[in-house]
Image: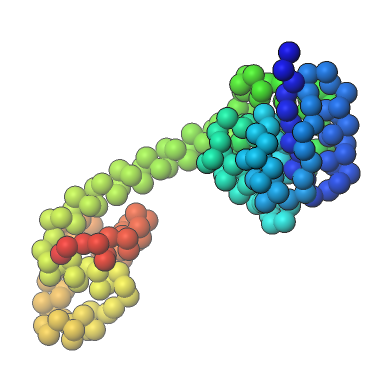
Length: 228
């Protein structure tokens, strides 16, 4: 029977030795490497192809383990990664799941829990912990809403005249009505009239509301790309 080849990445030698000791007593597991940084984890993993990496989150940086996981999985998604952590930091663990890690181990977990996590991940028998399943679903829902808003605003933007688009762009960049009127050589009354037309097309009551929504969908990325 093939053994589960495991790499440990943690900047604390005592932690590496502790988990290495647990692994060494299991007939179906083999410790193939032990490193102290995310960068070393990337190099070792891509060269030696372990089955599983036990990866500390915070090593040379606060998110070194997450960053290393992203790099490794972008090159070889057959490698499975289990995060090692001291505390259940929701935000960091959520980032880790989004990066592609499959589970996490609290460093004070029992040996039984540690071994169970390793074996379950190796067999792809993973049950996502409820609090993170809910958070991921919530985030996906948020992304879907953003895409919907972006599509709606792009549709409206195509209906603006060149002049209306330029005025909206100027407002987005922080210019005042007076500044816009001077640049465009028209009166502020004309600017206000065109803004009224913009508001009707967006079906909104004030321009601040329009600008707020445009920021939420990343309007700045379309400013230079627009052919208007």
